[in-house]
Length: 506
Image (cartoon, rainbow, N blue to C red; front, side, top):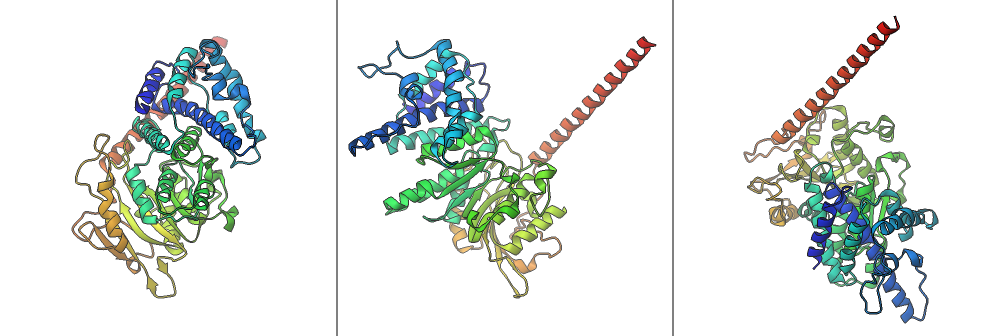
């Protein structure tokens, strides 16, 4: 039933001029799902309060509750068509009354971690793109069919929502930045092994895949107490996200996984000065796939001791600073980070090796991230036990694993859990194999701190750029050239017009 409802919603959105891609489909489905969820949550809390002889104070005023404007019911429990808005009346209510009302919660909320604040943030960031009130009525009717009161229903809906996020990631444009393959995330969680009571953080959380998988991992632990569950709900998962659409999707994704008021902050993590991070801000576990290839402005770079425009390098500095002593991290980064010879790359590798124990490097094959030609590695490290121990005469070892599924990966043949099973098993003991080996940190060149993936068992060095990367760079250079030529053409045109005007004036 759920799957068919989602398909029906997409079919209606496909007819909407304001919705042009999977990104729009997911965004518009998200805000409606959120309001449907909120209505169910409030109904449950009102019922619980009633059983205890108490009165529940609803967050939303009566006219703005789902049961009032979206799906008013008659005595028979069916939609009351006389009360249900449709057409222009429905669209105008949503655009002119509902969204402004909900956005106002941001100012009324007692703090940023409250559900009221999240409501205000969400409805201040997105807009209703369903311009036909008749299409909106049809979508609302499909949403109203969905039930996610029980854990089983939430579990099924969360899977469908994850599928929507995956489709969005496959849709091209910038959708891929919101989606990290879930088998890779699950493997990272199993290596880092978060525990109940630890704080888990992703400062570039996208659709919150790492936080959701972390929640599923801990929720499955046997013998959880009521106190454990409360800790998981309120004091375990923390994220930040810069982009509005991703922020909304992250909130909805965590809600569907079972976290009622997610601790997700809508902000630019890199705008925070590293010097301002205090002990109370630090986390036990960091799991992240920060955006790479982006370029940050000079004023943002001023927040970091190692200044670079590369977004991922700034995030890596942030993560190292955010870890508690003894804290563990798993971070995805471009594989060229291991061998680049520019000053920022060398300095950052030095920082990582001298402040943390980089114990594992997972080398991922091309095609791991669909729609992105770059090759990546996952760095696993622990804060406070440096790989390079200056003065002690000791050095630790770095264990490498070269993931080779034995097939070309793509949309129809993506990474799966089986592909990563050997890595997870061998990583426990850091055993050598045809795909894995250890490097003594004492052998690392102190001038370059080169960490290249070089399989001693005959595997080729894989820090060279993949064909997809090369083609991507060629395409980027072509685009830059075209823009330069266009600017020259515009200048020539302006110059010609200027000369003509001068001649006319003469």
